[in-house]
Image: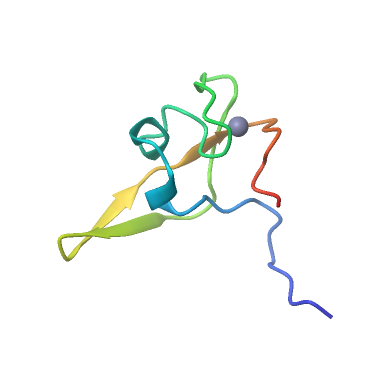
Length: 72
Ligand SMILES: [Zn+2]
């Protein structure tokens, strides 16, 4: 049996694969659509990347009904 995550909420893609707009949470991390206050969803938890030895927090977001949705 596969080990399952306790949540079915999606995880963000690796930050290196995203555009600047996606990294800033302006566009969906999956499908790159421009997010609106009525459609945006924050990813669960806190997200960090390393830059010049520093741990930097970032705020990936996605659209509520994303057609890609983080699923393979
Ligand atoms: Zn999307």
